[in-house]
Image (tube, helix red, strand yellow):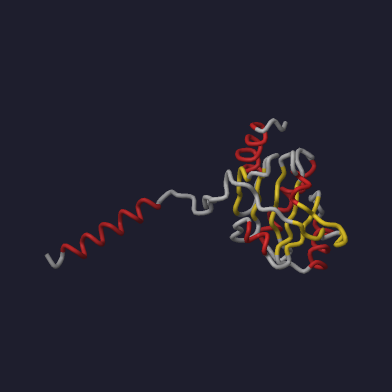
Length: 174
């Protein structure tokens, strides 16, 4: 009997570990999918006198990309964003998260600026409202302001082709 409890605990642990094999640890399901996106009204990075207001994108799908100049993975993702922005398929909105404005502006000037608008989230409150774990993260928001997809980590051409493009097609965007 005294060996039965440790044996059962060992077997239970083995079952849990086995169940986790093969799971993609980069895919964290978001409870915000199919829920209204957080609203925001933030300064525009390139012109702080202007505001980036989430409501200005109502009526059309758009991508919100959370990034920072301090983020190594954001630099890895940046060429993909530049290529995607050339399609002008839907607005690409940057959410510059907990960054220094001057450094972020230099980063965009050096690497290129794919964004239709860049909102400054210096304190990170909007990112918290979106449930951001870390940069980069990208959200596909539909014309009704509902989050339809969340990518944790860098966007890749494969993610765009397999996740974003089919969702946009379902929304009637070609």
